[in-house]
Length: 169
Image 1 (spheres, rainbow, N blue to C red):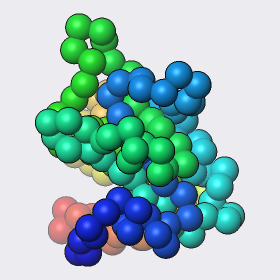
Image 2: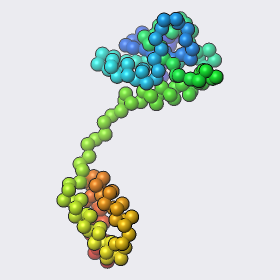
Image 3: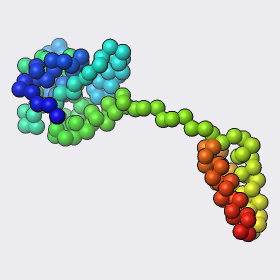
Image 4: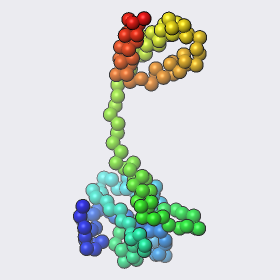
């Protein structure tokens, strides 16, 4: 953790800064919603290496002078009856909204091939006949629907389990 004496010091090496505020204080200033902030940051991804999200004090927020030091103002749209959130809630909203910017693509998994899936369906149907539960349409439908979702590793493990079950029957 680093601490700074002033907001200007904290923002000195930041490429793009966004300040949160609960109320409009500048007449001609653009206020982005959290979703719009995400879009803005996504668009700037090629040239922005560091971003600061600036929150104000719990009791009084940011001063007008502090708001003037940032690149973009944002606020969480609220009902007029209660126009602000506490600091922790505001941080949570922005962290959730902006978390999509750091999503890493899931590794590509190898899907089970069609022949393996066909063999699994046949083995399971034979097992259901052997166990005298082949008339359970709900179970048969569930098995047929779910088998198509299996990954290669899962399909292989299920074949292994079925082999053990068949051997012990």
